[in-house]
Amino acid sequence: MRATLLGSTAALAAVLLIGTACRHAGEYPQTAAGMGVGTYVDHQDKSASQTSAEHNYQADQGVRLEFTNVTTDPVAASPGQQVQLVATYALMAPDAQQHFQVTEDRLVTLNGEKVAPQTSTTVDRTPGTWTSKVSLTLSPTAAKGTCQLQVTASAAEGPSCQLACSFTVE
Figure 1 (cartoon, rainbow, N blue to C red):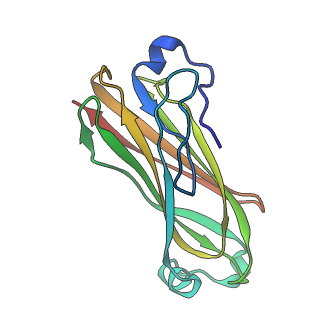
Figure 2 (spheres, one colour):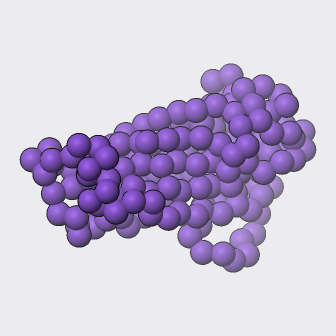
């Protein structure tokens, strides 16, 4: 899947560079707007039973999807530096073996304006707690300020959740 610039001007494209979301290592060409290359990495942190116990989940609640954390690493970066956009969420369901298609969307804004292509990655999940990361490379001429990262996770079978955090370009 390639990240594309949606509805932004070329001036905004110069503010931040974001890579392609992918689950496997490999070489990917730059986009026409000169976007850099990034990666998507994920892992399961906790099993379905651990997640259910931690969130006081009961099977009669149906399918639940909740963020436990959204952050960046680092929380303050310089132009040209790489930033990891990290999201951790809990997926709970009556059947711990059931598979769900979960779409993760990440949007980065500065002063309310989109400054990087929105990434959207759909992954196969079973109940449990999951963490995923998408790399973002700041342009060498990135504007200084506080950027907002908004992450949405949506299960094809129904529930969705959203959480945001901020990071600083110094």
